[in-house]
Structure formats: C-alpha cells, structure tokens
Image (cartoon, rainbow, N blue to C red; front, top):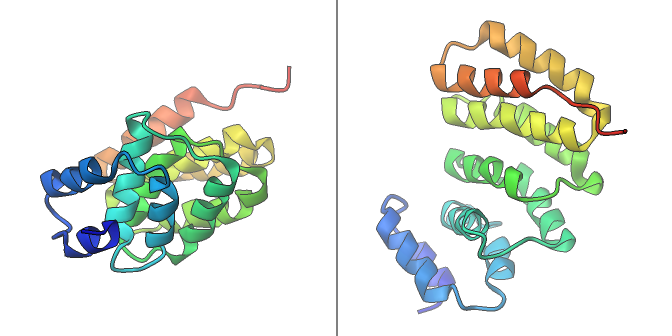
Length: 174
C-alpha cells in the first residue's frame, strides 16, 4: 500500500497505527520529500507532519535547506491544530532559515492565539527559537513573551513561557 493511502486510511488517533506506517516506509530514501508533499493536503497534514516529527525527533533524518523551506512554505496552509503543533515541535530539530523567517514569525504569532493551549505553548517556544536564530526578533519576542506571561492562564503555556524567559536571549555575536 502507498504511503499516501496508508495516511489517508489512518484514523488520526492511533499512535500504534501511525508508528506502523512509519515502520513500513522508514527505509524509503525519499520519505521526507514524500511527507512534505503530502503535508500540503488538508486530509493528510496531521499524519504527514507527525511522521516528519517522528523522523526528526528520533534522529532518523535531517531536513536540508530546500526541505526546510518547503516546510516553512506549508506553515500558513495548515488547518488542523495537530499539524500546527507538530510543526512547532519540529522547530528544535531544524535550522530556522533566514529566507523563511518572516513566514515563521507570522506562523508562531498566529499559533500564539490558537484556542488549543498546547499549540499556544509551543508557539511561544517557537517564537523564542526564532529570536535566538535571528537576533532582529529578540526585542519583539521578549515583549510578547513577557506580556503573555502576565495574561496566559493555562499551566502548560506558563511553563513554556517561564522556560523561554529564563533562558533569555544570550548574546551570540561574540
């Protein structure tokens, strides 16, 4: 069965089933490229982004610049909270490219207003990572994180905010 068919037939709930899909296709040399293409389809985005995240978290793959830019281009098209969360959770495993920094900023700011507290929490982490990678965003990020620290009520969000603010923005220009 094709990767696309398997993701399409996945119930979008069973971790065992999506892990089995991964196991069946893990040896595919072009797996990441296939997943990036499939992630652009609304009905496949959750499964495709989960599989990309799984690959990166387990150090089974790395995204090159072209793949990273393709992922960044997909961010604004993602409609489901799960796919958005997966992409935010991917950020620690990729280099946030200069070429896509404004798209990433819009994405994390949009996600910081999401109804889902986990998406909001990871959005603030993503904003912090973007500011660490691109110093021109540091002051804006600091203000947003400090403001959110005062207004956010969800404990999971507050933990991520505290962590980002505690880490701060060390001077990397030395």
